[in-house]
Length: 148
Image (cartoon, rainbow, N blue to C red; front, side, top):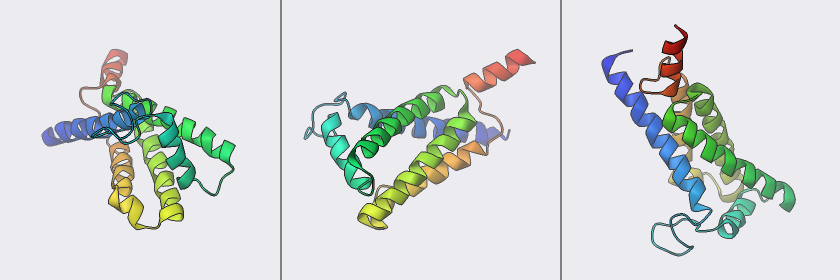
């Protein structure tokens, strides 16, 4: 691994992972209540309303299930990326999740919505992270050394 790459992959892992964690726990009021500064949702109700707008083409109960699954995935991918466990799979999963989110945003609000929120950038960054062969300072690296 080139010397700069070990820092860049760590930065990318942490940036993506922390973002996913911060967004996911916001839905449970961890950062404050809805309407507080720097709070996107503040509770499940406000997040769920937005999720149903994004997935307007699905029945209400199906959209709610997908909102729950997306939240579980975001929190799981975030934790896995931060600690560097199953990093390649977490990166692929987060790339797919954000790609489908971007596609749903286009259907619901038009092309500028996912562009304004850099959803394509997050998706592409996740897929790029998945192409890296080694994840320095990760549980994956520790497990690989342990097996050798």
